Length: 361
Ligand code: F6P
Image 1 (cartoon, rainbow, N blue to C red):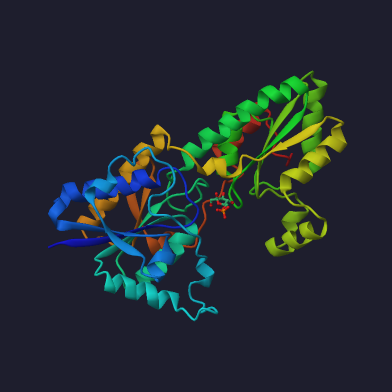
Image 2: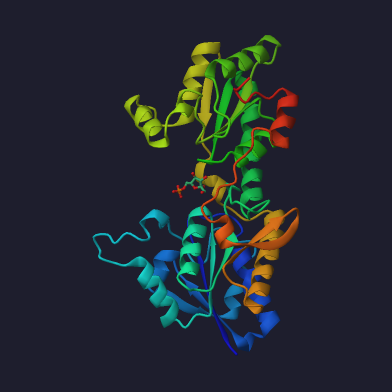
């Protein structure tokens, strides 16, 4: 019997989305025969599912996209907490998504996304839809998987940015603060910081004391090293802010006119050390470009595994890598949870043994 498979990409994009779409589609055609599979592309994430923006895709559309960044389906942020809220447009989003699934005669729905996407996937699964998730994000913070696709490419890009900052920091004897994406989790900053040889790494999971950060920079300067590199996660905060709730923290920063964590940090360390400091924000560059070879392989493995789940009609799950093996987790076991960096993580310990400061000791 013919299978109609809906597919959407939701939330912030990342390299490897197209490679995953390709992996799923090609493996479905191989496993079940091209004549038995129809892939329905849903535009712009859950927005497209809510508004029935769907079309049957031709097998040829899945060729030539392995190396392409972004997503051929388009994406949109559709916050989970608003999914069950009926707004001014009077649209019942959950009802609409259920109806699109029915109207399109879908046998299952593939959702490529991060933490927010997975929460909605679980909601739709509870509503009786056959859902399979695929873990994407440059943040690498999806619970239950060793790694998400997009992360490794972003680590490479952020590392390249830090490498380039090294030379200019050295020429000018400056402190260069590189702001790396990651609001809640510091995986990207931690990995790129180590790969780029940062002297200070600040992440949300380890609140910093600015005096300790400055002391580490002074120690470097005193030992004759004229410059320093700091890798700072966009969501980093200090030990005083750690005592506050997220909203309170944001309000206080707004009152103080602080726009970014890194802007304040650069001003503070410059004042404390007397060394000129500059900030660099690679920002969305970290989400762009062609996936690395690692991510192409990972995305392909994840996509092929999803195709196998479809063939076996195993739904309500999300693909994962656990201890290096491709598998899947139940959506109910992972949705709503975040994978944070433990302050005792081997990478943190490794960096500390090198003398990298996290601003906490
Ligand atoms: O979730 C991925 C991410 O890249 C975060 O690291 C970052 O905070 C956020 O997206 C930025 O999202 P956008 O600018 O697309 O709203």
